[in-house]
Image 1 (cartoon, rainbow, N blue to C red):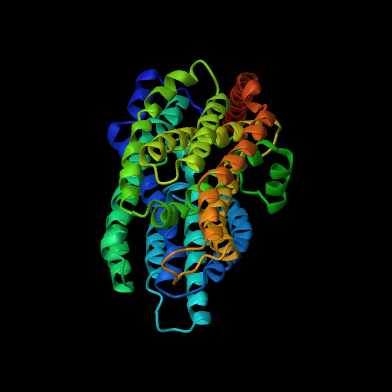
Image 2 (image 1 turned 135 degrees about the vertical axis):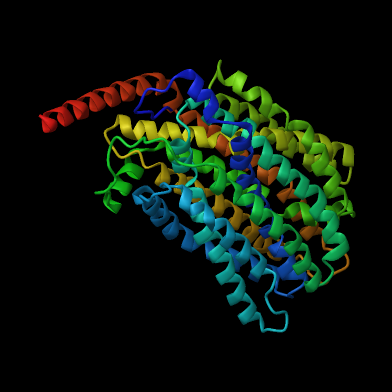
Length: 468
């Protein structure tokens, strides 16, 4: 995974990642993670507060995803070609501001407008949040990291130990927010105030990375000055592994952001406040991230993911039989919550490996474009989750006004909280068997390092000739 072009002694590598930088880097993930969680409540807000039919809300969110396929590719391309005094990936951290402004704007939609105008407003704001601001924040992630840190061990630390921070932030959000929803979100002003309470501090902590972490590592062996969209499509055509990574990311975000848990605890359990208690129970699985760096010394990311997916499938199967039994739901939550940790935390390492593979094949590394593809999968999953929820509930006869839902609607809620996610994760498990890159990474890294040294020597000789 290393892209160093200069020699750095071990002492300098250790000082490269301080605790302050680790926290600043990680908190931005907490900020964007909470933004995605807040947007996951858009379906219930649109149905319950704005009075938009469930199927319409679902279709609206689904339609907005068509923009992402275009904006993600261009965002990755733009980031890969960026060359500023403060770096290549770092400038795009400022998109955190736009992300939270447009997220808040979703809940500012005037309730007195017609359904058509409400849909237009939600579509535009949701598109800006996901197709513009979140897109650039996904595209710059790996680009920023490899140019700020040179030691591969730091990539593991940032993905694991650093991954705990956003996870804890999101878990705290999932504990507090549902409780506040039950207390405050009984009207649109209540929703606005509730989102604003989170938007301000999340914007501030999301900007810490920009001010604390600077790009100091020159890693580009191949200049991107002549990079064209044709080169991007060539890489995406010749690197099949990024799509397996994207499938795992897509599935996890589709399920996580579906928001069906709100309906499950409202209509099946009968107590939405218990959602917070369930999130608190899930924190039991978080310390697993502390041992992953040690495990990675003996195995690969893909093997860890497979074990996690098996646990996740088991958790969702238990959900099917749990009903309103909270102890069973808690056991299931620990399994599927802990099982999804490797996918959410370690895909960044796989993206770096994909960039190494590109270089090995004589192509542009394109960390930005690879990150954009994975980011597109993340947003598509989140959007489809919210969209499909509304559509499927609508088809099952879910009524936004009924005090008691029909049997078909309740069955759909149960399936969306159990067997459907289990089946989707099974597909990911099977797809990971096609990911063969991890077996070849030692020889790929060795070959790339030799080529970099050779290129550095040739460049040095060329400079000496010019001086003579």
